[in-house]
Image (cartoon, helix red, strand yellow):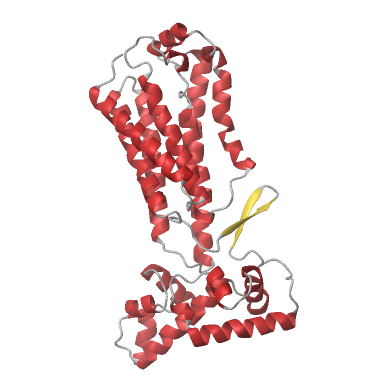
Length: 376
């Protein structure tokens, strides 16, 4: 069956952009692991669109032996979303365990092995009739859609966990990160819903084309943003520690350890750090990270993290944010008419919502309540 011309143009755009973004994200020298995962996602998406052209005119051609090769790529897309979300926020190394998420897609291919081993003319005839067919065909279709919604739920659960962890530990992050992530989840859910409706209401070319439009906007929009900013969704100091195969989250990687330094050394290092913070006021820098502070005081990030956890009982952002809040409180005492948001930005906070949350956790009051208290 001939593909509508609009859909052909749409797929050509999807193929070209997908291959271009895949190259930029996979082979870039300064990109993150999340970027490369997203690049692989773009590559498979482009190949998936390319696969639709093989049977476009309903006749055999030089690419006919590849008929159906991209049939179960949607199962890959579902896993890619979850794996991308996991790596985008913590930028950890890709492991062999991550490959397990792509196992169900391989299962779909194994269940349809008879189709893929058939001669091209047989495969073409089956595709024109609406492959996949029969019980195994319906089973593989069910697996693809089940994976789509299962991984959608897992991704939403993961993002909620990261969001709660970042807030409760006062990590220095821009809350807009999670606004974007939730928008991604909602759009992905809309795409899978349209795809499912397109199958149930077969044939429904309008829904299929609309879903393809959303897919291109969805994946390639994220890819462009990730390419421009490799740490787009990353929260500094948020790390995952494997424990019996389950991720547990913390802010500093030594928070639960007894420490490699003795008390006297930790005490001396802490005084050095505090002196640096008071004299250089580095907390006013909204780009300050654990590694940058460690470099400034000439200690390793491991030892600095240990000192803050063991000696102060705080993670890095709790330590730094306390200086920021103290600075703002002092400035408000000197001049109650100063705009609070201006003070927050000067003190090193990157967003109003982060500042408000941190200020209330340290003082028990909102910034406005605190200023009114000073005036009274």
